[in-house]
Amino acid sequence: MTIIEKIIAAHSNLPSVKPGDIVDVFIDTRAARDFGGANVVKNLLDNGLTIADSTKTIFTFDCNPGGSDQKYAANQHYCRQYARENGIKVFDVDAGIGTHLAIDNGLTWPGSTFVSTDSHANIMGAIAAFGQGMGDQDIAAAWAKGAVWFKVPASVKINLTGIRPQGVTAKDVVLNLLSIFGANKLLGYSVEIYGPETEKFTLADRITIASMGTEMGAIIILFPTSPALLQELKQITGKDYPAIEASPAAVYEKTFDIDLGNFVPMVAKPGHPHDDASIESVRNQKIDSGFIGSCTNGRIEDLRAAASVLKGRKVAPGVVLKIVPSTDAIWTQAMQEGIIQTFKEAGVMVSNAGCAGCAAGQVGQNGPGEVTISTGNRNFEGKQGKGFVYLASPAVVAASAIAGFITTPDMIPDQPALFHATGNRDTKHVVRDEKVKQVKPTVVEGTVWIIPKDDIDTDMIFHNRYLTITDIKEMGQYAFDNLKGFEDFAKKSRPGDIVITLKNFGAGSSRQQAVDCFLSLGISCILAESYGAIYERNAINAALPILTYKPEILTQAEIQHGDRIKVDFASGNLTNLRNGKTVQTDKFYAAQMAIYQNGGLL
Image (cartoon, rainbow, N blue to C red; front, side):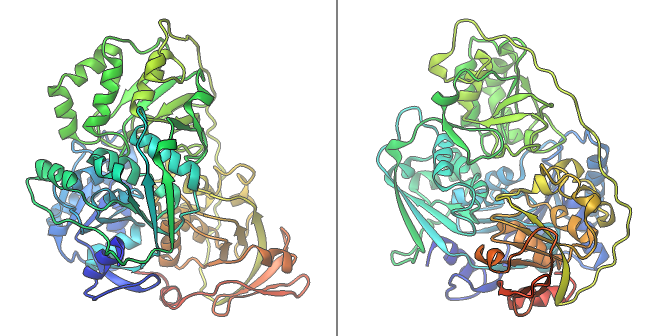
């Protein structure tokens, strides 16, 4: 078996599993964050469910450590009260990013399983553990049952050959991989990475690469353990862990041999993490701000790399550089090593530990028109604010902040570039008040909305500024209001309408609201060529009908925007009622139909 098959089999009491098997997986640690946590609790209470094992259940308040947003603060307090009543451990606003805390506190370990309302929970692949981001209903089920259903993914093997060039960081490695595979070529796969150079990767290196598996559409990126990694984990946790690796005869659906020696320092251009370019191609692009942190690049090694560039220098006038360590322990270590002092002398804003720019409520957000260079994992439009975000390594971000434009540490000018940035905030929202009555037919008819776009991410579907909303009736009005060309979707759509879109629909975050907004509007069905892995689960668990189709059927049935079609979930038959032509989509599989007929997972 592959690594993921070994872990899932061991946690399902099965001698072996294979791709496509649907099994109940025991979860060693079950987490909920301050975003999503209140909905998890609400799901439990609404369904009369209790906690299976409070010793394996945790809250992590990492999205808004300051509680600076009133709704976040209310949700955090709501979760604290529930935790007190049920003996649940809370890693509160002073602790840091939940996935990093789980690794550093021994709550996950090689061969273990971990779920969270964090779409980057698959960061656990860095230590050869199974981690998954899941929606509110999935996490509620895990808390109540101790296990979740899961479909075993097929595995892909990437062999990194050659020697890593000087100056190519772990962030550059993953950006090079994104430039090769894009956002959906590895969609739904478990990816294992091998090669002589990977044996030298530190825990921080592995975390950086594994944390961006979500941006590739992968279920997880897994590294087999190495003696150096196991020793590093022992130094952090004080515990001895077993080696985890695939069987010699493990079966991979695809294998790729990639020469690491051809990798170059890269940035991801604004809009998509997979829109990558060499730094040379964007050098001298002016910036307004920089951000160093996130679950991708907030380890002590990342802070040291930034400090080595900033030592004895100043951030350019007019540029704001924000640095956020991933955990409070790392913050403290940085202070003890003098790194925080270096940052402050350089004119850096240093915040308390947490997710920062990836979440709407903490430092790292930018304004309209603002150009930011960031070490984050996502730069979707609207994700880190209303500006434009380039992704790069900590050293490149630090060098760029000093220069006032994108550059590398070896090409920082004597005099920084000076500039000013302006922008206007748009706070208009479309309101929809209709109350939607939900029905559960297995055959639906509706008017078609064709949205011809790949990689529509969850921020485009339901922006993170609305994440504190817990009432489904309020969610529909915000559907697609961050998707260019479809901002008026919520106003114009009608109950029963059907959405047809392309590849990797629902990429990105684990937010349940990106599903529930369509339930709120009464959308009867969504058809896509493929879905983001977390989104697919969330939709199935919420009883939102979703189907996949082969692109040629649109032509065969001559489907146009505004046509009325009939879709049969059980058979997969799709009929264009305008011309009577019938084609075949993928039908519901048994588990999906069972959950749908049950009215949802819970």
